[in-house]
Image 1 (cartoon, helix red, strand yellow):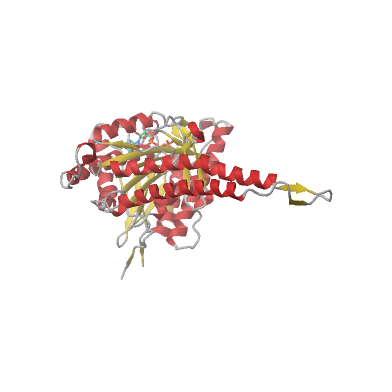
Image 2 (spheres, rainbow, N blue to C red):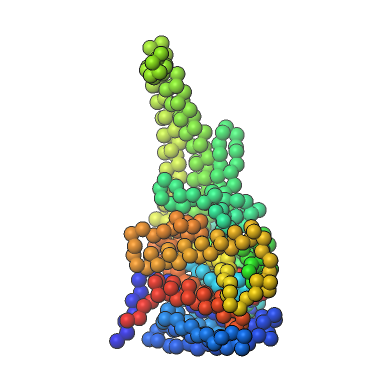
Length: 462
Ligand SMILES: Nc1ncnc2c1ncn2[C@@H]1O[C@H](COP(=O)(O)OP(=O)(O)OP(=O)(O)O)[C@@H](O)[C@H]1O
């Protein structure tokens, strides 16, 4: 009998066919069939065009569901995202990745091109609308404390972050596309450092990716549209208006108390910079002045200028005072979660519109038929494929419970690290594919990738 095994790090994989585009309307369609297994589905595709030799490819039973081209975004949302809402409402992180070759429908699925009609909204906007519905309901039941401004400290809302990962950096679309550096800190966590401001007194404020709090769905929709206007496009191997970056959109359930506590951490960090620098400068200065070089070239203590340990200790004590203030601010953030009125605080939806993977079917696609790419665009294409390979390896390593998960292999996987490691999180991949026979190789490669992800991290049947 078939058994369902769902590992904590499982990764569900869906397939979504898009309709033929206007430019493909004269091309023939791939032969497609879905084979139902106990709970999962396998797929078979056949190239039937006369210019191609007949080719067939079959997957394993790696897919949760296959959506035909007639299914609208609202249908995909109901089947894929809605069932995970309860996890987010219990404070977990649920991530959704759209993977497919350029022009296959990733942006259409994740973000959408019609921002008004419900059935066409991208998954992220449908999820935001649903989150607001649930959170507004909770707000009417939680007891708001205090009076005046304090009254609203506990009121739940949605904060949104929108950024792109391109090359080795992230670009914050809610902060004029400012370049952010992706680094691993001494604590092993990934830090995405955005805008750096030099303030008076030597304070250095480094902002993380900006989270914009929104208090209604309308406000959030407008905010998303303003950010999307800054998305960069370029020429892919398939079309001229291609997203050449991975766009990441996060929806997090927050309240004012949490936002203020996080802001306080940023302020305490900025205050620590000059004090920490002074402690280091004093230490170096004292050791420099208290040593002299002998004629033999050795360094020995200078009897006329002994080390002023008291000066070092005062500077060090000042630094420790500011470190303690930072620790208090960090504890206040943690307290927001331990004291939360509802478990949903911090719950997150993460939507990733991956940059289009690029495949060249040497047998069918004449190079002249492809849009011309600059050397820079070709380099970007290689980096995109490296990121996508790294993502697959992370999924495989997680699913097989490997001790070392290769998050560091690419900036994309570094940025996604915390989402992957979030408690009780769930991850989902939607493979977007074109039914055109001319896209057989690209479609097959997308399905192969998803098949590997599904086999590695999905629900396995035995
Ligand atoms: N399921 C669908 N139904 C209707 N139209 C679709 C669907 N999927 C994609 N399209 C249309 O196909 C075109 C290309 O889709 P989209 O921009 O989403 O591709 P993409 O995979 O994001 O491409 P790239 O990676 O190059 O940015 C768009 O005009 C989009 O509206």
